[in-house]
Amino acid sequence: MKRLGAVLLALALVFCVAPVTAQSADQLVAVIVFTIDDGATSLYQYIFPALNLYKFPATAYIITNVVGDSEHVTWPQIQTLNWTYGWEIGNHTMSHPHLTGLTYDQQVAEIYGAHEALREHGILGVQSFAPPFGEFDADTLNALLLTGHTSNRLAWDDTDQLNWPATFNEWNINVISYRNPLTFAKNIKPLITETVAGKKTLVIALHDSNPDGKGEYNLPLADLKAMLAYVNTLVGKKQIVVKTMSSATVDLMRYRSLP
Image (cartoon, rainbow, N blue to C red; front, side, top):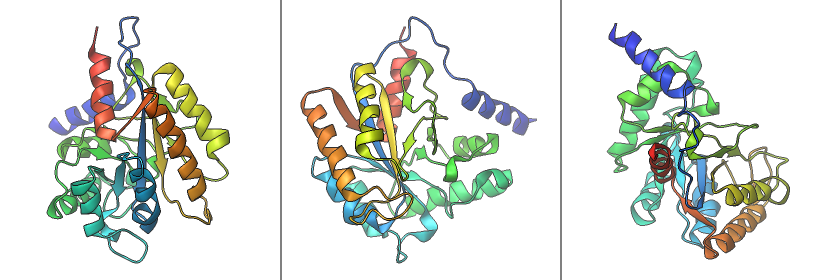
């Protein structure tokens, strides 16, 4: 009976959002959130230096079972991002499975196992979660509630890429994920312009970035640098702020609750 109640609660959390009312408060300024999935080596080699040039924080969703292999960042690098530069580290499961194909207990093991691995390496208070492939269900949300997570970010969203308080759902966070043939100039810059105009929140998901730009999910480094330089000019004009996923989530929930 308790399990059924938890499932119903999880379903309500993800499939029901706050009602849209004329009284819903607006954000005071536009927000952009940079998130990086998987923890490929380019995260520390190229993406972090590009963001740190402007002291921009970000949220890195880590697959804990592959940390330290030849294609992924190491635990000391993750610790440096979190401890020294204030980056948020999020949960991306232990092994990046299709969660909806797993039982509830298997999902708990994947999510809790990653949470514990991060904790054991000094990454404390992990709250943000990104399901692999953007796939999740009521069991996923129950597992997140069990482990103290406070948000669930989508992966692919082609229809409603921005977030704003009146319709914000922390268990169903809209995102624009980079994949070829998207470009900064044609696809991402217009979204940033729309974000600023509407004082909304844009969450960008990256997987990889290096100079050659090869690969379906590889944002060419030149494009990444152009995007960050553009955002920095908007920050200087006080038209947008850069936040971590958890910080943006807290603010959106606060604005949503205002009369």
